[in-house]
Image (cartoon, rainbow, N blue to C red; front, side, top):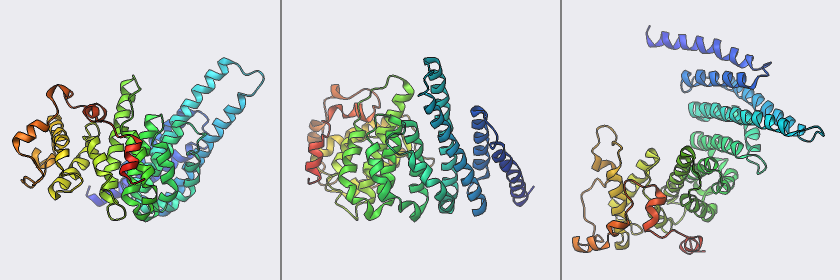
Length: 388
């Protein structure tokens, strides 16, 4: 069939399957089955592609998600009430804890489904999101658990990133919350929050500078967060949280240059590079560093920064990650213009300024391990740099 026929067949399939899935949740009491239905609906919506649904259908889907969200919160509240019964025992408590864990997974599915609609329809989803804004914002309250915080923050991160001016209008309200949770003990919450702060810097315009100091302090602390997890999966999330915090500092310097003085922040950001875990964020931030070097930016291009810049590039060259297709490695991680700025020392001086070989960590280290040769930025040093 030609593309028009395929599109018509896809429309017919989605219009048949999705309403059936949505209706199937009305009387379903089994949480596991509910999760499978929502998962199937997610796959249908994702497979339909961007801008597939019109405004009326988006409103219907939004109302459906709101109902599922409300029911999930109500079920958990009812379980918590059972804990106050006189006959409540430990065995019942374990069962309720297990059921609440399933509810947390279900809420995460709803967040993923909401994010899929936001990323696929951008501003067109905002009218439908109006009915979801309050339910998701309620999960940002301090008394909610870490899983709820992560789910809600991920949703609002997507709104800020993909919903244009409508999403940017939420930044004055959301940014203080994201800054607070940027130093959460939970690495999942921390990662989602620091990423959101970076998106606020990118799209927030003049709404961001009033929160500059708090944001830089929180991001710098998150970027240097000590590893406490023993499980490999959680360690990986911790590394991503560090990478996203560094990237968000870079976004402040990159996108807020017209509204505030970013020169005190640039050395902090440089000190925390490179980003070796999150490849996408790493490419963007290292390309930004190359641009600053090409420009001879006075906050970056100083003799005192030579050793750090060389350490960053030395680590990046060793990374087992290929550059984008058609681009040579040098154009990917190094400045595109062959130049030797005036501030760059002679070869003899350059070799003396390098850190001793024994102090270099073996292989591509994480941002925290690479920082061992460089003293961490304390809150006092940051406040001095920021002029407070």
